[in-house]
Image (cartoon, rainbow, N blue to C red; front, side, top):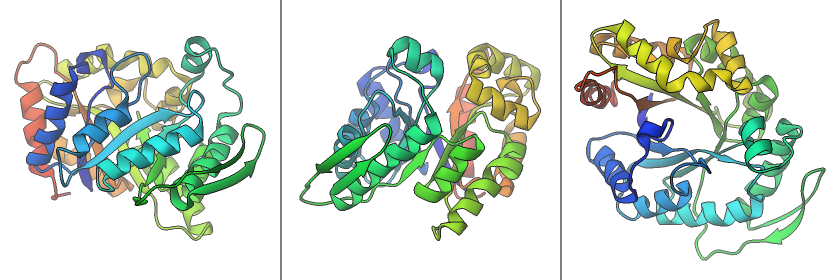
Length: 310
């Protein structure tokens, strides 16, 4: 199982552009498999621009965005930007897309959050041919596109979607290269995510998809302190419908119960449980355990030590 780092899930992750690129370069130097950032319109920088810049200053580490909301950005525009980023990273870029959530799309953008699964399916029907073949003709309910996109060198660029619900997981297996999850625990991965996405990929004659599991993580000696900190930092995710459903699959009350919390031995055990459940990637959003000044460094070091060992 590949191990990566994810920043941007909380306001505490906000940092300057130079600092963010420095963190990416350091993660590569420290041997991590990947580095991910979200694309959040209300906070931080344009994710693809950041990763393109980082791609020119790194050589090995995978760089992922998790995820670009589909409704506000036309798939032709995203295809062009994604190909640019993939070129700048020498095909080390992973494009994550997803419909996001009703409150953000309707309240922030003033757009309709209509039929998100169908919207994402049509989005992929435009995006992937344009990225991979340079042309697309598609007529659907959301998009009517006849476009070409010529580039000198066409890089490879895996596309994963934020699939948690059954219809989205089928779509991820049928039309994408995998899924990136958030707030999904090992039970949800083992019993809900993996069977659905793998079955859809197999039925479509596609390779076994990636299952990239993103979760908060902290190393500390007092687990109760760590889980209280997780409850404070990530509580809002438990109020979003899409995450609430996957937390219900895990049969837990809130995000603090799926966060990876404990000492170094416990961290390894929890990551092994995700690998056994079917995760191909674990992406850690490191957070501070209460007022423990050492928890961030301990977490980073413990994750670094596990790269290539699970």
